[in-house]
Length: 214
View 1 (cartoon, rainbow, N blue to C red):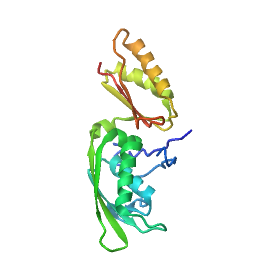
View 2: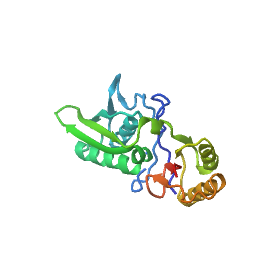
View 3: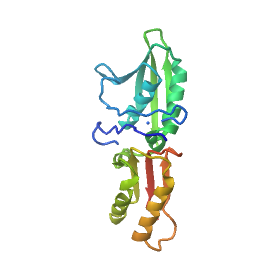
View 4: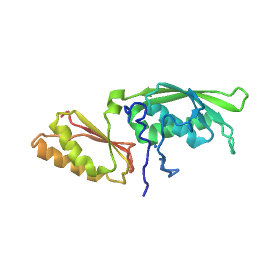
């Protein structure tokens, strides 16, 4: 069983709201303004000393809705190939983290390996969700709150409900049952079932999207 604890990343304005099934690790809670991730007082540059730092830096950028960002990758105990590290980190964030899978369309990067004590990675982020969609995401510790949240969303005429859960363990069927129960109660005879999407798409999702337009 894998536990998911991925960053809330709302501190950028309390506006906006990561792991890998291969690496089987947890994501720690990140603070967008933490000196751990920024390069000293330079708020335009994030620092990294290992692969996980690069992943975390990417999540900080996405959580803040940044379209561009710069990471200085320093030489740690085990020197990393910057281009390979950036490629793998971008893929992991885009495909395997809830926020990346939900909100990001693409991640691109360039690497400046001018000789110095760090390598500069410049990133560009393309989004498939608006800042409003990300900021309207509701946070819950588990799917136990889904019934009440969905009932309220339907009653208020919402077109969709997006919920970030801190813990999710192969519970797609439970989610589907809850959604169908609410549909039968609130919209009896409405016909087609409401589409449900899980991000990332797999056994341990972190974000659940329910489309209520139909």
